[in-house]
Image 1 (cartoon, each protein chain N blue to C red):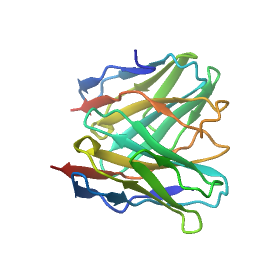
Image 2: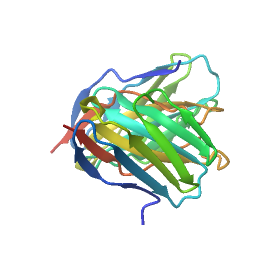
Image 3: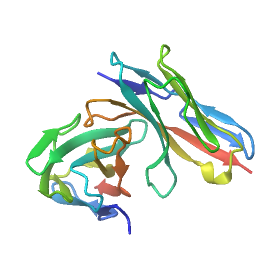
Image 4: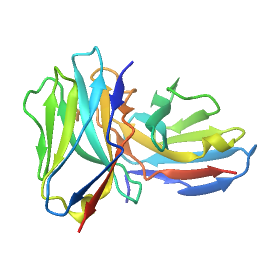
Length: 115
Length: 115
């Protein structure tokens, strides 16, 4: 079974600084996708960034980037120039390439951006 | 208008009552999912449906049932609600032919409290 682990239940960062959220996963699959979702107080699940396992290049979306280490099964999220609006719960998620039914989520990291 | 909607957004009920949570989507996706979110556990899959005639159990289906009334509608029922079903429930959709990384699109969630 695939498992996703987020070892940091809570984190905080000063506005304008950089923070990294950790995620590790366990799978025997070779083809899969990884995601980071943001859940603000509104409860909406918002896709932040995604990565295909066969792509070695790390994904980047504006201030958000990932460090994907396939051999180590690690998928961390870096948020640069943190903004107050980044305050949210962040979930790491994994899905196998041919099994669209089974997205696995980590327990989440609650990030607080302080002014 | 939102692509994936859920009703109700919040619901308080009593132990033993039958509850139905509804999900509608305008994305035209064939695949729909129901998840529950609990603190410290992330999101877990309850049921999923790949089309109107295909419904499958997920990781935690006990105590729940579903109905896929149409491509656009997927309902989750709690036949006899119990307090440990208090959680945040999400509906999601996906389109495996889109090539978008198996991305799932989430509704706004339903907060259910069972007293």
